[in-house]
Amino acid sequence: MLTTRDRWRVYKTGCLMFFLAVVMLTVFQSGTLSSEDQLQIERQLRMETPGEEALQKMAFYRHPKSFWNKQQRRVQASTEEPQVMLNRGAKTWDITSSNCSANLNFTSTDWFAGLEANFQQFLLYRHCRYFPMLLNHPEKCSGDVHLLMVIKSVISQHDRREVIRQTWGKERVINGKKIKTLFLLGTSSVEAERANHQKLLEFEDYIYGDILQWDFMDSFFNLTLKETHFLKWFSTYCGNVRYIFKGDDDVFVSVQNILEYLDSSANVRHLFAGDVLFKARPIRKKENKYYIPQALYNKTYYPPYAGGGGFLMDGLIARKLYLVAETLELYPIDDVFLGMCLEVLQVTPIKHNAFKTFGLVKNKTSKLNKEPCFFKSMIVVHKLLPRDLLAMWRLVSSDLVCAQKVESL
Ligand SMILES: *[C@@H]1O[C@H](CO)[C@@H](O)[C@H](O)[C@H]1NC(C)=O
Ligand SMILES: *[C@@H]1O[C@H](CO)[C@@H](O)[C@H](O)[C@H]1NC(C)=O
Ligand SMILES: *[C@@H]1O[C@H](CO)[C@@H](O)[C@H](O)[C@H]1NC(C)=O
Ligand SMILES: *[C@@H]1O[C@H](CO)[C@@H](O)[C@H](O)[C@H]1NC(C)=O
Ligand SMILES: *[C@@H]1O[C@H](CO)[C@@H](O)[C@H](O)[C@H]1NC(C)=O
Image (cartoon, rainbow, N blue to C red; front, side, top):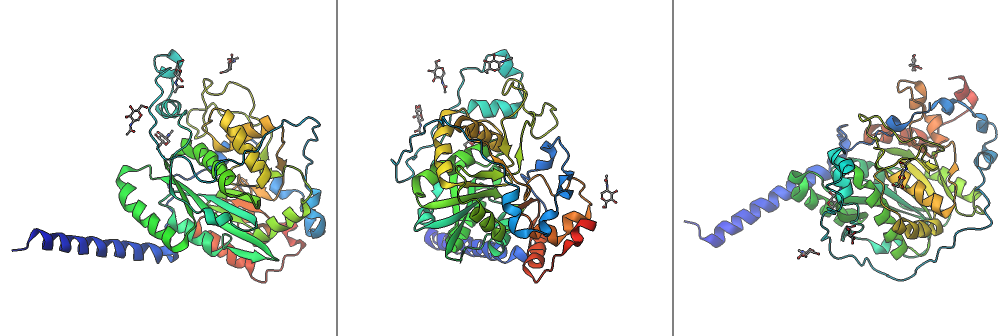
């Protein structure tokens, strides 16, 4: 007969061994990646304008040095900028409770009753602005960081994080410029996954120390929370970070090109650059992932905004965005929400052709999507899953010779 203590010991040993086995599997799995993608963000669906302009303007192959400058659009010079007081108050994450109940103020109205369930849920909890942190790394911003790369991810996509750490997300110092990487996560949106995956995530963070996690559910409409939480986190801990690259975990990024672009933009005030859409219309087709009912947004156009797949901004603008974001109601599409904040700041985002967050070309079978010389000339390209990302990274990092032949494709 086993005593209760013995049974407990056996049980504990069993649990521990199971946990270790799962961890080993996870850590060594990165070579055999599956291409399933939950919560996959098909940004292309949102595009109503064709993306074939990828073919144009290849002249930079002949004038590589002047490339970055040439394509810049000037930020609108505005003599009367809105004054934003930068608050240098809280030095730690000051949210400790996530007790936030549904706002039932408008549940009896007709327009609310007519909404789809996901919009109803969004509206019921829209006033819950901040949640506690589960994993934090304030030390990431210590010292002078030139470029902080922050990547939106979800718990189950550990393979994407793994490949990013091996490729463009590798932390390093280039010409004395320190580059740091962080992943932004919420909690699992699948109840069954929550306990096990959380343990794995904590182990991953124990190994790499590069995960920021907040206690809100990682759902599509909660991506805006990820945006505002990051801005608040950044304002709290990162006084000395010069630039931020923020993007998805399924993109190809050239850090070398980012650094070149930033060098050439050193005297741009309010740098915010990406794949900017001007005059995008809210999508009214219900089947579309980005559908927005009139009740939520009734204007014809969105303000200019950069595709969330990858954009660059300077540290000062991030701090200002945090303060403006606090004054606006949350909007379910995160990159549009940032566009709304920029509009309040009267900053026009810069559109640059090296950001392809809506795909390189719309025709998915086009050869351009596999052409390493294109990737070598880009800053960010959506979308590449781990295996392709690794392969493309190796090609681009090899002694790839890129001539003018790209034009003839
Ligand atoms: C959450 O807040 C409500 C009202 O603000 C309060 O009645 C309740 O006790 C709180 N629950 C917890 C677990 O703190
Ligand atoms: C609901 O309405 C009341 C009264 O108008 C207001 O005081 C309260 O802040 C509202 N609740 C939320 C969560 O907005
Ligand atoms: C966002 O996360 C909060 C906290 O986990 C949750 O209560 C809320 O329902 C989520 N909202 C959406 C739209 O998924
Ligand atoms: C659009 O929405 C705003 C705020 O929700 C409201 O004040 C305005 O009347 C609406 N306009 C139209 C044309 O419905
Ligand atoms: C897409 O590109 C492929 C290869 O370049 C071409 O054969 C095909 O006709 C194109 N499809 C469309 C719809 O343009």
